[in-house]
Length: 336
Image (tube, rainbow, N blue to C red; front, side):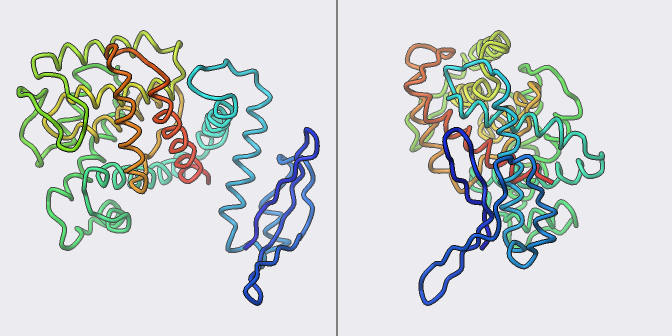
C-alpha cells in the first residue's frame, strides 16, 4: 500500500511517497521518492504515471491527502476570525473545505456537478433514513434512484422514505426559500408522504422511549420553533455557520415538532443552513449512529437555562462530532 508520509522539521513539513508491504509476517516500509516541502507542487497525475504499479490501489487515498492538505495550507494563510466553538486547526480545516467547494467543485461543468450531487444525495438519503431504522443498502438505493429498480424484500415505507428524501431535497435546493415555519412544515410533509398521514405540528404530547430529553409540550411547539428560528436568524454573522447549524439541529430535535420524521427533517434543515451560508452540505454517517445520539443527548444539559442558550461545556462533544462528519463527508463526496 502506498501513502504519503509527513515529517516536520522546525516549521516546515516534508513529504515522502512510501510503500508498505508485508513480508514473512512483518510490515516493511520503503521510501519511493521525496516530494519536497510544498504540497501545492505535488501532482497526483504525475505520480500516477511514474509510479502506477505502486499507487494504483491507493490512488483515491493519496489524491484526498494531497488536495485536503493543499487547501488546508491555503486556508492557513488567511487570518480567520477566532471562534469559541472551534479550535484554530478546526477553523482552518473548515475554511479549506469552503475554499475547495467554491474554487474547485463549483467551477466544474454543470453535468459533472449534477452527477456528484446525485451521488451525494443517495448517500445522504441512505444514511439519514438508516439512522431511523431503514434497512435499504447504498447499492439498492443507487439502483432505485438511477435504474428505478425497487429493492426486493423491503417495505414500501422504506422505499418511500428514500424517494421522499430526494423529492424534499430537490424542492428545498431549487426553491431557495427563507428558512421559516412554513418551509420546515413543507419539507416535513414531503418527507413523510405515504408514510405518516399526520401533517403539520403534532397536537399531542409525546415522550421518546430510551431518550432522556423531554420534547416541547404540544401547545408550545409553534412558539418554541418561532423562538428558535428568530434566534437562528439573529445569530447569523455572530456564530460560525457550522456551529449554528449544529446548535439549530440539536434544539430542533428537542422541540420535536412533529409526530414522526423529526430527525430526517432536522438533518436536512441543518444542511440547508450550511448551504445558505455558502458551505457544502454534509452526511452524518449511520456507522456513527451511537456516537451521534450520545453527543445529542449530552448537549441536552445545555437546555436547562433555556432553548436558545449555548453552553460549550455540554455542546463541545456534539460540535466536535459534527465537525468530524463534515470533514469526512466532504472529502469523500466532493473530491473529483
